[in-house]
Image (cartoon, rainbow, N blue to C red; front, side, top):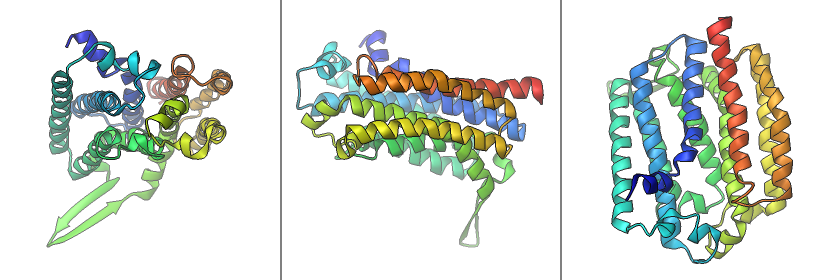
Length: 316
């Protein structure tokens, strides 16, 4: 397998999106707690990007192995395993190598922090694998958007904050005299959930847009995704609502003083985002308009990160 084929197998062009939650969480830790650990950041970066690559490779592999419809854009051209005639053994070896790196760096990170990171990281790993693998992959059910949004959005952002502020007492697991005590700062958890919503909804919409575009193929391949259950019209309405929820969330964050007032500039992104929403409403294809969901995610969350960074560098 060439490097070019490997990068296509893991769809490297989509990995910038998976790094956005790590950036949001780390910057929020600096903004709210004035704390940052470079070592923990690097370990999480390695673990996160490799498990994301492994998940994508597994998804491509299972699409290749389980495809019922073997003619059409999504199978012959879009799937790199078919297009480049990659051998099963090499694909499996690449997946195993990525998982090994992800697990190893994740374990080192948990040893450098505490049990909370191990438990949440382990749960995220399991969901990432089950998303594409197993007897009934999550991606083939109506829960793909929910799991991808909450895990890649909220949980990853939470861990990205927590690895820098483990001494702040956001979550504490204490074992003493045979008793396990779990202490949670509910207010801080709510704050982190609210700051993660632009990523949660953006990631969920990337998955939703993908499933809307693939509805015809999914029916033939027995992938019972959310749009299959609720229909295209309701799926498109959900797609629009999830974006508008982000802007309501931004206003709430400012009102509650969780984020600086400069983050109100994110509202400007409603102009290009709304344009992309209308374009996607008109035509839903994997080849032409799916990318609009990725663009919307990058537009909203890039401005989000930039405004937070600006506040840290120039307004604090």
